[in-house]
Amino acid sequence: MLKCFHFFLLLFSPHLTVLAQNKDLPSDPKATKETINLYRNLKKIAGTGFLFGHQDDLAYGVGWKYENGRSDIHDVVNDYPALYGWELGRIEIDKPANLDGVPFDKMKVFIEKAYNRGGVITISWHLNNPLTGKSAWDPAPGTVAAVLPGGEKHELFKSWLDKVAVFFESLRGKNGELIPVIFRPFHELNGSWFWWGGRNTSPQDMINLYRFTVTYLRDVKNIHHLLYAYNTDRFATREEYLERYPGDEYADVVGFDIYQKGDILSNDKFITETERSLNDIEYIASKKNKVAALTEFGFNTLPDSTWWTNVFYKALEHHHLSYALAWRNAGYKESQKDYEYYVPFKGDKSATDFLRFYNLDRTLFGKDAAKEKIYQ
Ligand code: BMA
Image 1 (tube, rainbow, N blue to C red):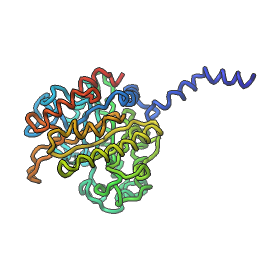
Image 2 (image 1 turned 60 degrees about the vertical axis):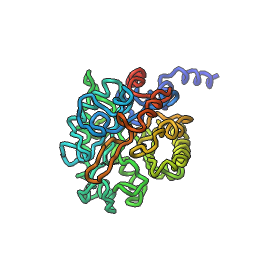
Image 3 (image 1 turned 90 degrees about the horizontal axis):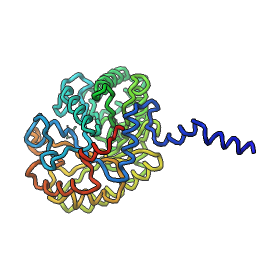
Image 4 (image 1 turned 45 degrees about the vertical axis):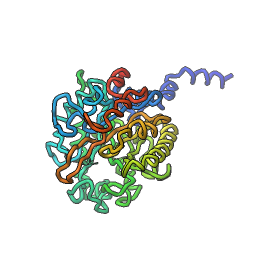
């Protein structure tokens, strides 16, 4: 009887309600209302489709820069993406523009515009190597150890996080509310091209760096409008994927980056590998109760005119991920005498197919995102 009474108490106790909800709360116990809503809606959306995203979408495209309201995606489908990627590299050294030339003051305005029309924001950070002062691609061994507490560059690293915190806090909606951001620091951390990745550090040091970063921003800087995206590059197994995972208290999104390379003949390989990776990511996300995402993808210059419906959508159609972010339309790069773009521009060979892709039920763009009321 007593047992029954206890059970009764438990059933109607307010604590239980909190417990029951916990699985739908982000890792930050103090996350703002809009951030909690974003997190829940990202999970909900995975049941119906995925948000389509594009890096630097509003800043420039192939053959243009900073034209008010312009976007290569909008030029092709008469709608904006649902998700907008931005990049903070060089904010840490007080440059007015990031490593791809996007001025931070313009970026802030673009982010506010995107948020006001119901879009989602995700931000990466190709931060310089704090030990050598060179770029993110300088793999000097010992860099991660040097920025951890007790390391010679720890104070410098904290001062960099302070600058990132100022930027995040400057992002405000119409009522002064903070604009939630999916922050994905230390991306592609299983590869060895960045100072924080792969062979350039030990998995444990990387885990400590991730945890330190989240703890510092959340508990010292009091930033509570971030969701954290843990993301690797291509990976072979779940074990490899999770080798540097910082823990459920430090991540909200689990994702990976994948690019198709080579000619059209690699289509099947791309589909097979993407599907296998998505199976793994979805398994991990469901076990851990996190959001599953394709944090970056692309096929540079889209040499296959039907890539969107014949390859990309085929890889995704049987999966349940919340979003996919196409990388940037840098256009012609003088330094490399080559083009870089991952979504079609008006008149591009894959533009017609992209419109077909846009019209599929499960591909969600700007107007769909607005209907979802993601922050409510
Ligand atoms: C890479 C390329 C570079 C760019 C970097 C950081 O994949 O697009 O041109 O500088 O991302 O955004």
